[in-house]
Image (cartoon, rainbow, N blue to C red; front, side, top):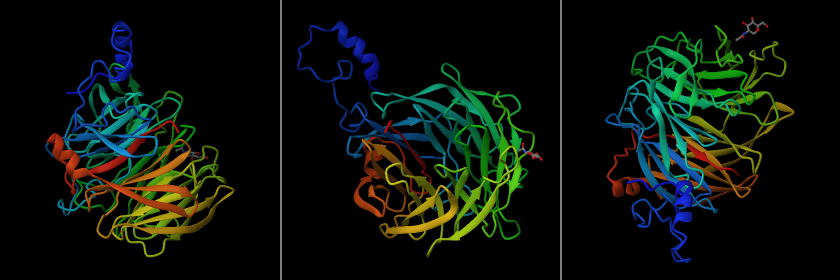
Length: 422
Ligand SMILES: *[C@@H]1O[C@H](CO)[C@@H](O)[C@H](O)[C@H]1NC(C)=O
């Protein structure tokens, strides 16, 4: 059972003003569920990842306290099924994507790759581990959705489909109905793929709005015969998209994965599997800023680097490599985004296989959370200063799931994102 949110409980508290002054707990939720200690722990932040199980996808939640410590919250049905692309469905990283769970503000969008649907949730400001679905899951108007993005300004969401019918589609978020399709926003990537994809070759990786919401980016991996690319659409005022996308083929790169905006520059940091990194720089672009100059970078010893984040506290970038279990810190000069420097590498537990990651700012300090299916943990690091990330405790995912009887498998789980206000 869920507790009623503290926001609602506060008005109830006013009605029971005769209650003893020391009755500190939520009056509607007066029995603490020991298996869900974070559910009404009161924030200030929340962390979310998904089970992506083929028999029912669940969003797992945790409360983050003032020090970034995780307290398990709940697992909430995402309204559809998960899925796993080929060739080996017993190995982790099922969607080969970043952004399968996406949080912006107090909204969370999650994809159900096995049902071709997506759902939107409201995050409770007072109790971030408490989330509630808005409306019903909707069709993503394509197959095998793997990634979502939300525009900070309009609140509109777009989804990336990676199956037979691949491409993007966009939605407004209605506070009663949930995701509502935007006309003229379904666009194809024209890729020859199956549902589910037989292997990661040529599959889409991540979808992302530009910071001003005027462009929509999608990264696509390559294969032996094709180089991957970055697709860029322009977004119209009504949320519809340009009919065609601009295709940017990275110079030297081959397998575009995650996308991160380079702060203070009109550029993207793009992890490139096997190689390291591409920078897409739009500074000298055409009028609609869709054409990028690209530069590739080799990241030392990298084998499968596919996830990237920015830290507001250190102003540096962090990328994770699942196969070598390495977390790498980089600096990128906003005045010249092609000036990329390796800062430090932080080896993770051997075999922990860190995939999706999130950097969360709490009280001016950043903490990194690495979803690590190889160890069935969330590995936590404190990003103390540039060049100084301190390994901390790890959170046991298996135990949390077991305590509430919801399945979480190393091979299937994917995605991690956070709610925080800084
Ligand atoms: C961007 O503008 C160029 C001309 O400068 C045009 O050829 C292209 O189709 C436009 N692309 C998009 C995605 O709007």
